[in-house]
Image (cartoon, rainbow, N blue to C red; front, side):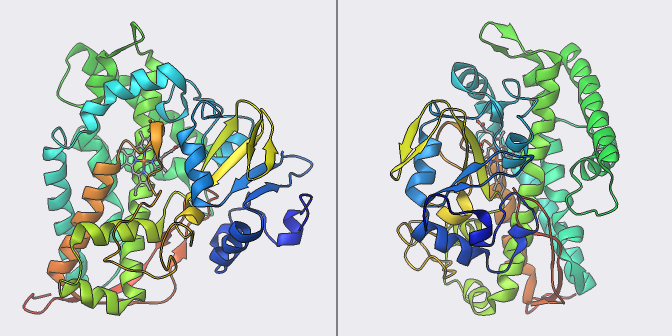
Length: 410
Ligand code: HEM
């Protein structure tokens, strides 16, 4: 096809959330990798065109070259198409250059495995309790009854949100995101987001006066480039953690369970010790890829795959496709819980590599570990309910029957 190939010709619109729940999405990306690895996705009367990079090596080169492919205008297709992320330059993920490096360096300590031991212990306890309760029920909606509050509880532990405030924050967070609620209005979502920001502003004020060993206190006290963070920056970065770490991890957990339900032979083999748990978790992360793409803006003209991307163009790099690239993985469309090495791009790469990767891995490992100890058979009950998003992939509703493991009472 010629460079003028349109979205209609391919039969897809990657800016439409409905496209991304298509059952043949993997075929679409296989075709793009083979025929149009650097594809200019046409715009419409109301939105600009954008580049779609689908090969592993090209996606990696975008992640590595943060001077050319910048994040401050937004790192997701939706915000880039809407004219840019209003948190640009203030929220870590959408900040570039020395300020990003300096802010990230200050936050790294809070995300290091050593600092997270207490949080990780609670993750294991929480996962075990939730899985035990689900087994007792027999049939459950795994997304709502097990996965729902594990990541949120974890981020609240990390930030230092008092237990009494958590239920309210979870409710607001769901309203603010709304990817699985058809009745939710844009105004409800906006109001909920505002309430969350106000909540964090008040908590940051309290912690600034009386610091504790938590991330809000860190954000309220650190100096970046010679000055403390503004209230806006503190609040946006608190909220940013909810956005970055809640739904992604929930989708990965539910995705793992759905994967086991669809591949009972792999589940049985894992139970029989065929693969090490950390190796299996990496393959589940590759297989589920909850964050489908990252978005960037080209800061200068640059050539990739024989095509010229102009300064100012929107570039999307598809983790989803990179993780299934036959040039990077042997038998990429085969789930192989023993796969090693496994250089998936589920957490990105380079300067913006996911700050919560250790925590996310701890959460998914804790859930799979609890399943291995407590569950025998995992059977799907009906079809799962997908989330509708151009960025996230997975299920907001996932009914499964969890049979007790041999020797475990229901
Ligand atoms: C960045 C994915 C869990 C916090 C990223 C990026 C990806 C990603 C792809 C790179 C974004 C970019 O390059 O623009 C995921 C997935 C998760 C997960 C798939 C779960 C399975 C978490 C958790 C937290 C977190 C649990 C925190 C509690 C962050 C932050 C960044 C980030 C703060 C920005 C880092 C920076 O810009 O320097 N994540 N994430 N993530 N993630 Fe995660």
